[in-house]
Length: 604
Image (tube, rainbow, N blue to C red; front, top):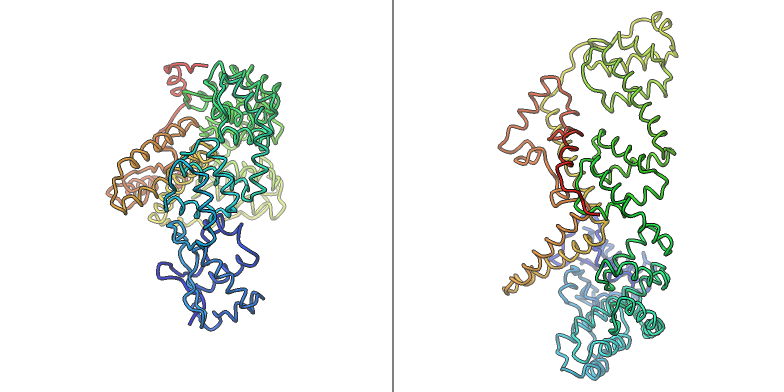
């Protein structure tokens, strides 16, 4: 009989998977060796062999005495992660961590007898129900808060909110403090002393806002965040309130949003902040102009200014240089700020911060493109220069040091050949290996001949490749946009809140209860997410794959003629790469400019 095994609700496999709940909620607080024993047991659960799945083997491999191993499994049983089925022979059953979420955790009620009496003394305005006690016990166990420390938190909440304060509020405060590693009596005492020490400063911030109310716990927490975590001085915070209160109805939540924006832009002194605010009008105009160059439209460009424009300016780029890069991005089919930022970083590393430097760089590229066009003409190929052509040409010119005249001579030999560009690459590779550097030397060598039989093309496979690349491109773009959205704190929090609410809805539906309220809550979250996306220049469509064919989702397996159309284009001579990467809608700079000229100007 195996010592450790999965419950019937769990599925064993050939990998040992660790649930994030364990890593986040249990690993940091487990006693010495407890994590080692749990993980080794989890690994042995997947083993098909029972001969070494014994407590004796555990003791031998982990070098931990058997009685200590049993003590550790008793600890995990109390945490709700395992079940001890038998003592002789020892048999442990691992339970799914969802059991913990469903509160299938054992509590040592004798441990909480004194706690319960003291808690009721603190909450004078009402009787504490068994459900409320259960929530307190669960929070204490899950977040490893000392019971006496939790009682101190309760007392502080009652003193702040009154005797009828709801238990969800108390639990929320306890959890927030636990996230800040405030779990012991000493920790809570230090937090309260800090609150008291900052009390006058917080009241001064409220007074500057025009408020005489008593600071809430949440406001005290935010003040600690600004001063301790972010590093803002009190004087800077006060000046920011004075600066902004004429434009906004100032609250601690709004001030937090403003200070976080300054922090992300590394504006920590009042001088830096005032310089930024004084230049903001010009930055907004630049953001509009760059958006127009990229073919984008934003009703509110504030987030663009903070995330991109101000940072590019601080890197040393002039406004005209930024507009030049935007123009280059549009012509290169890069039409999002995130993509433009990659080019900005590249040019920064190259030291190209001025229009003059950028023009020289772009002129070099254009000059090379003209040379490549001449080569394509000699090859008898009538099309635009591609990135593949540029890669070939850079390799010939810079890696192999082949002269333009020799490349042109090779092109004359490859003219009319199947896949002429690759044929030319083969010729030049052969000359490079023979160290041939001049046209005269090339003419003296034997003619380089490839197998000129027509290449057998498996068109069905080529169609599959086109469809696969289309799908991958759609998924990649959606993933990039989603990662961009998740970098926004507001969207990330809404996404997390949405997931929690969906779990709540599932539980309500499982109990057969009315779900109207929670469904309305979900709808509001979805609307808030949509607005958050718009603020960063995205839409719901952007974070989901946009396929070339919405019928088959670029699989070629729907009731559509995708495969037929792609094959027809391949047979006509178009390349699979071109078909796979083309945009569904061709946009020119001229019609984008016309579109913007017809739009109402953004208010600055």
